[in-house]
Amino acid sequence: EIVMTQSPATLPVSPGERVTLSCRASQSISSDLAWYQQKPGQAPRLLMYGASTRGTAIPVRFSGSGSGTEFTLTIASLQSEDFAVYYCQQYNNWPLTFGGGTKVEIK
Amino acid sequence: QVHLVQSGAEVKKPGSSVKVSCKASGGTFSSYGLNWVRQAPGQGLEWVGRIIPILGVPNYAQKFQGRVTITADKSTSTAYMEVTSLKSEDTAVYYCASDDNSGPYGLVPLDSWGQGTLVTVSS
Image (tube, rainbow over all chains, first blue to last red):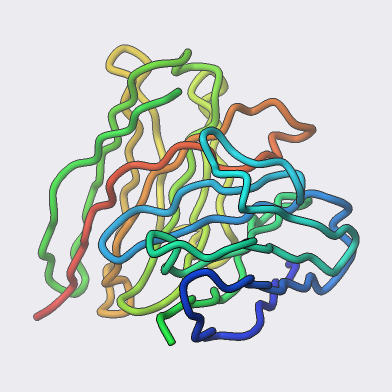
């Protein structure tokens, strides 16, 4: 199966800062990469798919890039509601696999 | 967009079984994919399996083959996931999540999620 690795595991950030999260696949997955945001006690929410296409009603401060094995999620200016855990997930091959997550927390 | 509502929390003994439901509204139930994803306490997300109701044939992560059964009832737009021979390690929140089944081999992102069902396995 394809192993997804996210870094860092935890990222202390101040509101207003620019944030960059990384995700690496163990083999090429083209652009078959999604990002999800999960807040405490809530289900994940689809943020990004196709590596760089925002999901429904996702603010423009979120952007994604990458292809092959290296991917990035960028939050241009972190808002208070963005403190959460972010997961990447590949859908290039079965089984679907997720990265371990990056927790964006208040510095 | 698809709206998914799951059944309530369960407490089970080791060795027993649990069946979780996921009722869908919106969209065309038979044609999209319904996935199950689990999350152990404080841990990440793990894909369990998927079914397309119109086809009725599920596929599973190898880890869950033989112990998990996913089914769908088109008449009630409800999907089910049954886990047998429960172990303490199965304690987790189980989510159902839909996809639009538009990609090759059904490989697409999960665009709507249920609220989750906590299954606790404890003696």
